[in-house]
Amino acid sequence: MIFISDKAKRRIESIKEADESGNELFVRVSVISGGCSGLSYQMDFDHQLKEGDEVFEDKGVQIVCDPKSVLYLFGTTLEFSSGLDGKGFYFDNPNAARTCSCGESFSL
Image 1 (cartoon, rainbow, N blue to C red):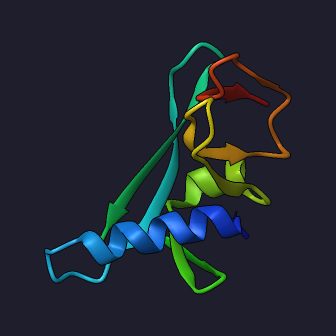
Image 2 (image 1 turned 45 degrees about the horizontal axis):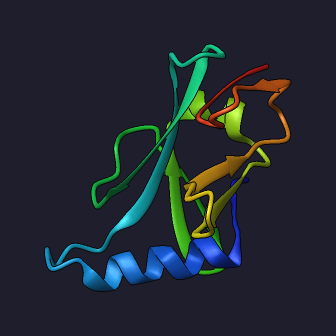
């Protein structure tokens, strides 16, 4: 399961409301190779499921993830910060053994 914080939910809802494409958007999260720690998070808005996608729902927000990434993200919470640090969306991943100082990559 992948979770979503209340702040992230509110921000996602505002992005979806501003979208004029007419498509029903969901959040796609994944893990890719790269970054200072070896693995990087990726987040996009999408409207089309791919074969094998895992679909989660938390607080009424649909979150989609490829099967490989689920192994790295299981139990992770998608967070949002609009404070002075200006992080935007970020991941609170209990599986990460180490994260880089920018918070965009991790290792197990």
